[in-house]
Image (cartoon, one colour):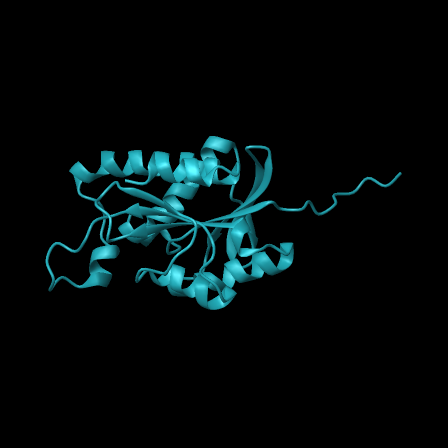
Length: 197
């Protein structure tokens, strides 16, 4: 008898968008990867493997075999990691769930969608460009709009949360992780009804 590790099929790829490196930790643009970290902690999955230009971890969530993926490219090139993982595991777009920040939602808001445009989010835009479709589920986490129109957008999304915003964001990350579990379980309509505000 041969004792070896066979490659397990993956039922779901869950992607947390953000920029790599200590300098970007806790910034608005990293809301997606922060929510992914909450999901990883809640499910006992460690993101400690480097592959597909990303940090990854595999485990079982809601009875499904899941690959958590945090791209280590910068946000604008997130699609490279997603496309590579999808090709390796032969996944369809419907098997990919993306967690991202959203400046059009109030701080702490959460929105679950089955598909949709990038909404100006460059990580989502990169994924859509690389995989050739926007027909994948996503959970968007509100980080608030720019304080005034003249404020530079890049400066805003790379800024850290104000003290009073932090509890709202911590709650949002927990909600996003819970919503992700429902999506993985095949209950996306329930996730949309329960967590989209």
